[in-house]
Length: 193
Image (cartoon, rainbow, N blue to C red):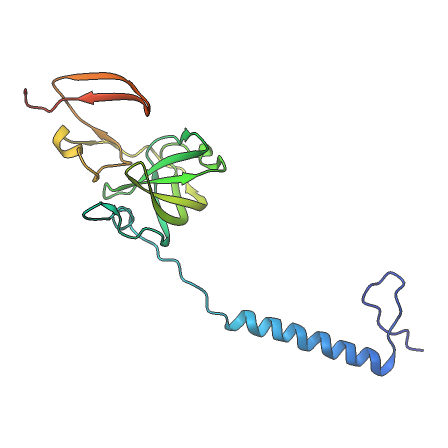
């Protein structure tokens, strides 16, 4: 005799004959409906931006041109992550010399080291005058050598263009100190005042 179908498997009432077939058909229709919905829901494509595109700014306030947009970026860590209060910042740069800061509050950025090739997904925002990607996902693509610093004049490194990148410069004078933001190093230009 047919023992029927018992979905709980733990001594529940077994369904028999036509009741079993009706239940099976209902389950199958439900599952097909779920699968159909999953198949026809269009996926939102997240654009992969260059670091130059992600770092673009809009005058007059020079905030991020794509602020609030969810994007993906790729680059190499140009320094170790810096913990700041309840979040961390990790600078990345690409082969064309553009940089961007990744921001994350779970402490996961501390595992990356300079030279690591990284892919990140998140929302473009700003923090302390810098364009940042508030990272939801960060993936290590591979480990590589530390990006080589570019030799630039003091005048070239003033501004937004090289934020997050490795640079070298020469200067005629400097001073250092601390303020509410931490330690700083002030350097003079290559020409005497």
